[in-house]
Amino acid sequence: MSKNADMRQKFEIHELVARFADLVNRKAMNEMHQLFTVDAVLDIPGFSTHVVGRDNIITFLADILSLWSGIVQAVHSGTVELVSDTHPQRATGRWYLSEFGVKESVDTYVGGVYSDDYVRTSTGFRFTRRRFDLLYMRAGSTVTAQAFPSDLP
Image (cartoon, rainbow, N blue to C red; front, side, top):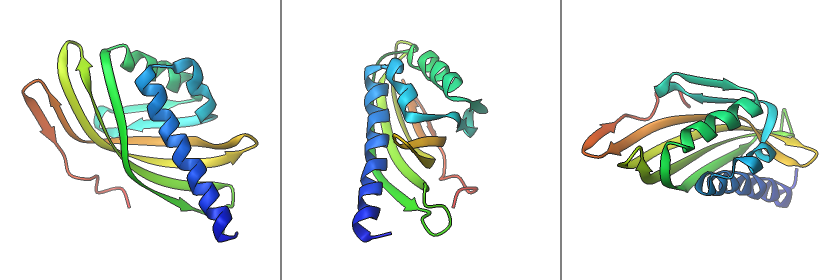
């Protein structure tokens, strides 16, 4: 694959991740289905959460977002690795993010990392797996901090 094609694919994945954050911020779950494959998986190991299937993921996200009276999710640095040698339609990524807002009447700040798998469909790259690991959380005066997960590369 050419360098320009690689850059286009990485940009497309960056836009996918940014769109996810935008939909979270707007709580626009009716548009979220466009971002996941039908058989996608969402894992949140720190909360023992494993959700299979696009519709189930959207329901789960809607339920979580209903706890927030206001939320801002900001995506920070990220990396994308194209798996073009063996699977030209697949890629992986890692994205650091922060969220802040009011959750269940408590001022809350979250920092964490998404580890993603993507697949190219006829309409562009989509999430096939998202894993969220909490690295930092402040809810009111309670603070939790964790090291980067040792089981991630």
